[in-house]
Image 1: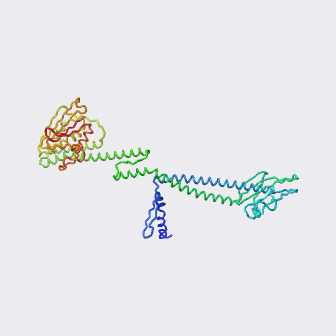
Image 2: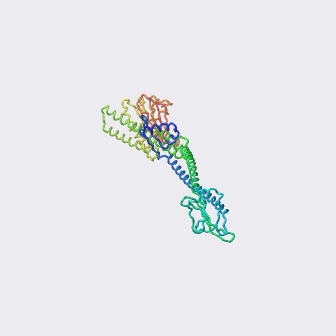
Length: 492
């Protein structure tokens, strides 16, 4: 067949059997490229690595094995039934012949010239009858048996009946009997009735053909039903795969479909895994933002030193060491965030003094007056890096927004009156302050009180997160004495 003929033959079939093609494409996706009425290539790829194919193939294999075994069993049963029916039919013919047979006084068996069964009188009719003596001497044969050899059996006893198929594929019934006349003369005979096997073969072939057609039709229907059942049963898995694709491209945030109970454990674990991964990603992003924000102050000090031409090696070493501490602290925080750690007590006074000294260099042009008050114990149970982040961000914001004055208080609280907290860090300035409705907003990442002022909107979010992790409390409001913002951080 030419390529052009093949193209003309396939194209109308595609439009006529679209449903069949769509069904087959579930397992045999056919790729066709038609150019100028010719087929460039026709290839079929079998989706072997799918649950649909595996289940359908295994089910189809089981059904095919069952139908083949059932076909063999039913065919064998039908053949045995047909042979038994033929045996009974030949048995009746034996009795019919015996009923018309006579023995003369001389002991000779005599048969009538015309028999009731017309087939025995017609040559090559397919039904043959032969009577022999026990010595295999031919006594009588029907007209239909002329020229037909019916093999006798030797050592055949009287009253014995044997039904078999001979080499000529004829079914033969041999029956031995003894005939005795009125003079008490007895003779032993064997009567053989044979019928061509084509009758039984045709019956079996018709039965086999009918059975195959029905089995194939039923099998096809069952495969289609099984396919639909599998499609319906595996629909939740396809939904999960579809939802995972939607999550991957950002259309969904979690698996929220109506899944069966058996898949609830899987979907819950997947949702938990997705949540953990997103939390880790968010943590890493926040840590990078925190790192860049924390390095801002040491870099600003170094930059201000360069601008004033007053570069102190001690200042540079101090700020470089501080930058190394910040990097190490942020890396540890990224690795251990969410985990409880046992920490020792730190001296808050020395940390705040270091921060004030750094800010005086950064904001030297504002000539800020830092008022520092300490009352009671100065020891707080937290990480040194956490205290640098909390106090540093708050003081940096106050220095940025104040006019001339910042007040810092370190106050040890009475455990009797303040049952939950043991230490208070209070910072207030004389700046313009923050509106009460914005206090909660600036604690979110990326939100700034004034978009016109340089910044990243990270510092207050870092302070809020650290205070929460430490089990403390962050309160904000207006300073009654200075008029600006006042922050109070309670430490446990």
